[in-house]
Length: 134
Image (cartoon, rainbow, N blue to C red; front, side):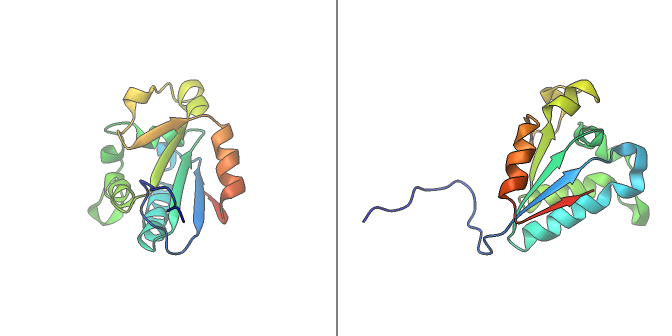
């Protein structure tokens, strides 16, 4: 009997996959932390969590931007971005939104961000157990 192929992803004991679609950018700073906090929480619960950033949301992933968004309790958005990254959340930015709305290239984004085409969102949504929109 052959063994299943090795995976580089950590094991997912829950078998659940969550897709979070984020459309809010830095223009509404009070709405920016909730997606990252929620994603970090789900990932900490060992749920396979992916955030897909479209519209103006990729601007949140621009190098240096999260540090400039102050939130209550003395934190900046970067605190919550780091929580999500540290818990294994996958960060995907819509290539079309980056190019057409945000004027961002791959080198402008945090190194943990992968730029993907819009059809990726459809594939992820069809495979997810739940889709949340922020």
